[in-house]
Image 1: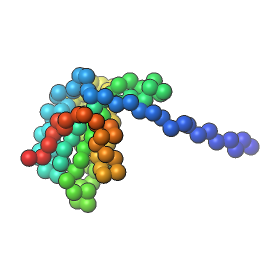
Image 2: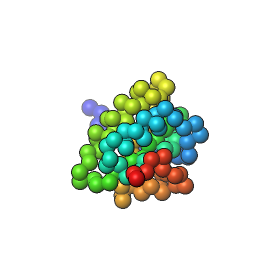
Image 3: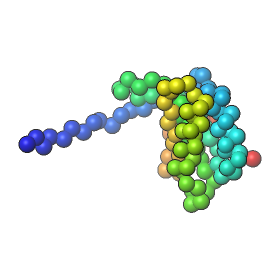
Length: 118
């Protein structure tokens, strides 16, 4: 019996400002965030894992106003639905929550939010 376990090395991700912002997606996401009312701000960047031959693709970072009252899984599901209708077929997208533990500067350094609660 083979009990060998292979552990994949930690994947390094690169991020950068979006070179071609998906405007149709951003417009619909902005409307969605405004209607929800519980999103503090949202960012757009591009990300890839070069070691996995992953192409550059959109990454959305979302900071909610009150983590105790907002279910982030709902936001992910809704943004995924918007992505399926507003992004080109086959385009992958990452959605991450920006929390005190996951600071904005780690993945969205120097990037202004495309949405900010007013």
